[in-house]
Image 1 (cartoon, each protein chain N blue to C red):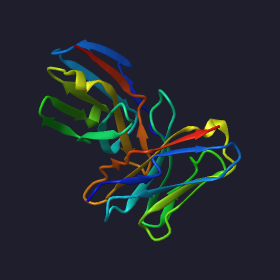
Image 2: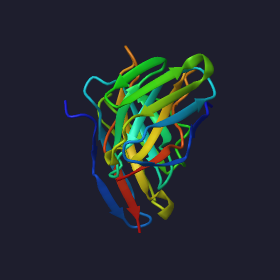
Image 3: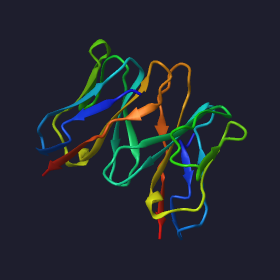
Image 4: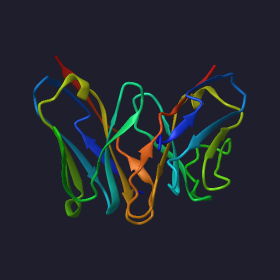
Length: 114
Length: 109
């Protein structure tokens, strides 16, 4: 197992464009989390899935943000109509539920909106 | 929701020194983890420790769940220990996996 994989690693986009990030969790991990991290801050929780069910999405930053996990495996995070304030590192993590919820993180996708 | 505090916010050490980082949390937890974020942004798992004590080489951690705090000990620090150390908790009542603000450690040669 190669761990949590995120793609792309870096993304530069123009303001107003839509972007989509992909996360492949550790196989057999049924929980998947998305976070945003801005410079000098800790990761900020956005949303999480258990299998294909999105159990918490109230922390998504605005209605421009959406996430899917259609078959309970990989997940995508989409940001529509990007703004300069969306520039950040977007992190994905996965975990089991049983026997414990130890989370493992991917290397992140760094988004720059110009 | 659950609140997580970390102290100190910044720490500068000479190589070879020991240090203690603290994490306080406001409610019961199912999961507590310590991470080290390297200069490239990767979060490296150090400990999964909702209670008790664990050791891994020069690092050890203790969580006292009843008093709602955890400590990370770094002994004989090395320059490669530099970076940001985060504590993160998963509340016992269905709350989200929440990070503290981190402790930025700089180990000088």
